[in-house]
Image (cartoon, rainbow, N blue to C red; front, top):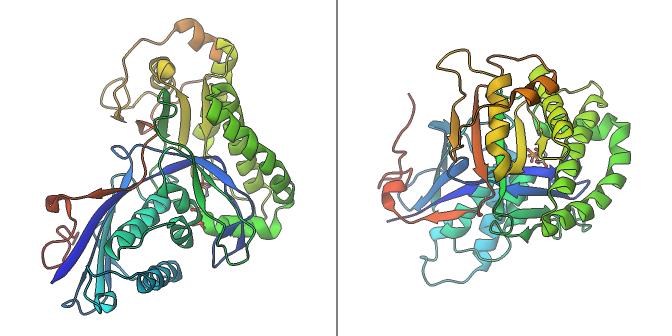
Length: 393
Ligand code: DP6
């Protein structure tokens, strides 16, 4: 007998950034953070987890390759899941099924570890799927947090606050929804993928070095708490200009902290800085803050903007970063964008050189819901014997 569950979970992009831990094992942050959860058609992790009496060991496959389950983070998550499952009383499960071995198969529909928050979606999906499998109800963002800090925010849709909490055991360091995905339907996210290579310093390692060496980070913790209130209010009021300005300042401060880390860390590349200039010049020319950029631990730009401005902004992206092959327009994955020609007077006023080939492709999405359970067996990543349906050789 085999019991299996398949779920998907979203990526989230922080607008108030998490950078630095006060407890490495429990993954407790030095400041609260806020993110928007992105649509899963464009960016999602998918996980199938199965337990069976016939399995002889725990096994895990990630993006088609078998991975050891020995990492301390995976083990911490599993331990907490099993502890909560033990506490639960249910007739559905055979009594000893909690001791059966586990097979987990997971895949992303976007590049892993390219600063596109893959660990957040991955761990949120892992935890949500296991919670379904073992019938665990109630708060699970604290379990996801044990896998990767930012993963706790992917447990909810819409706009999400990760409250840093004050308890030493981390019991109050949990995610809470500020507003559901239906709250601000006009908001759009345009990701400019400039590289899908792995990041050169992982965020866990980077933030650890920042905590140890960065003077600026101490100052930042004071600044962030008031920004949390301002950002929450901007989201609730759908005040785009305040939302956008805070988002950009947060991104800039994160990368300033990275540069003030010793040795310094620089995730942004020339093209990332070019995009920053483009956004500021455009906002200035049109006389409003129409677009915000944000960068995580990688060079890809994530733009927040309103639906009505997407075609004009995309026309500029196509003008400044035209593809070097396959036509004159970049590939856009996700929501379609009405094609309009760029406005020459705006292009001239922006006064920046073009960078052909610098953007590889774009992803266009909006704010989306939290993790989903997928009922159809055809969607399962494991076959009826608990083996992955596709494994790379
Ligand atoms: C720059 O959640 O990947 O994306 O907790 O060590 O797994 P760990 O780090 P991770 O850090 C994400 C950092 C960030 C900012 C953010 O998402 O808030």
